[in-house]
Length: 595
Image 1 (cartoon, helix red, strand yellow):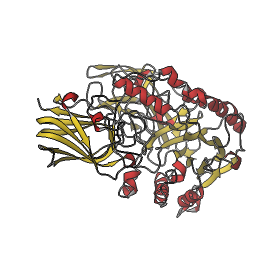
Image 2: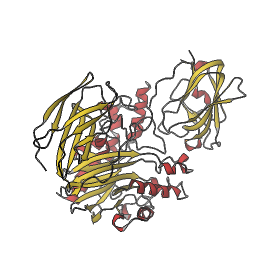
Image 3: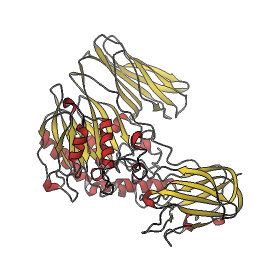
Image 4: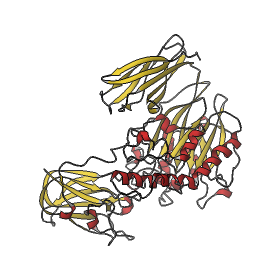
């Protein structure tokens, strides 16, 4: 590897938005250049960094590009090329002036490193949705999806009786050199009522399985792993992990963001929310990072890779930098538990590859129970080591296209209640470098969490009345959907829920010319009853209804706006064809008159 020259400053102006000088490092005798390629000139424009260096025969160039404002990083890429030119992934231009850092290192073509694909996933009781999906089809599709991802190391939480089926499915039809081994981590004495929790699957050679570790805070139910051999003779340490859900980080953060956004009284202060990490997770983190892992690896400085379900929000996501990101509601929470991992030298690989938490929220909770009002990211892949390079990372929350026609997709839009996290890394050293396109995350994964209010005049709640085909007397009365109070809900009857479709009808008091209607799902963590599919209908007399628009909505608590384009009617009815749990619920129905 050639020595690096001192930094070179390059000034860049972007159509009136002045970027501060870049920092660039390069091989001796050549400085990398770059330009910003943007679709606009204002904050919010989408840009990429196009960087160039000097190509050398039989060498690979490693480019690292970073876009930042001071210490706040907005984009980061590590890219490899043989022709001296790379383009970064897109990033959103922030309001502040930016600094672009570019470095390039030239490596002999056979001494770039070993690529690895890592995948962490909580399988929700072995792919059975807490044993409610009994056909076995979901597990079969889950294994098909795993094979599609094709990880080199798979960190599994909640295997719970499906471990051997997963191993058999992963290896079906694979050649000998590409087969997986499985390591059972959770030992019988540490099993909960569900059985074996943690497993590790890998295509790498298992050189050593670490012995069970247990103390007052953790056991093999929470952590375990193995030393895995790399093809170049080096090795890595790999661990699956799970930590406790008490002090529910997602639920408390959800409520705080909703309350801030809608001007409602806070049920917990930020300090009270952060105390949730101290119930058990902080002690578990100390046991993992300060005791268990050192007992396994000693002073070996080989890379350490970990993946699993932490049941914790990230301090990197809920910083001041992203206080006004979609769904954050101005909430800033310096979560202490995930910071333990950063302080111990671990990179949160998803957030390293996707540093803009507003553009790339990385939701993993919950494609089944609902995404709620905030970006819930509670599943992680961590990496530590001076030779580790992060190439890309994504979070998956949708079935493969070929599985979306399955009857399972409506009730179970993903294979688990957790999204999976997939990260491509490179371990620098002997080897030819990346051998497949790194994974990338899609911006936003859907629409804004809080859409702007529809055009028109909001019809006052005092002028509205509502009836429903089914409701829970008192707690779920339809009048609660037109009372102007976001904290009260209409809900279909329970515990015995009548079969859908259900209807809720709003009487506008007179015929009105309507511009839109807003259907606000209930703003609760428990999203049971959130309506996902239905039909908006209108009527002049309350007896004969005509269809206006079929609707299909996300599993979120965001408002759903339906344009009515000047339709005249006295009654608006929503037919709920499918809701979470087979129920129907709404916080508010808000009609808008054309102005």
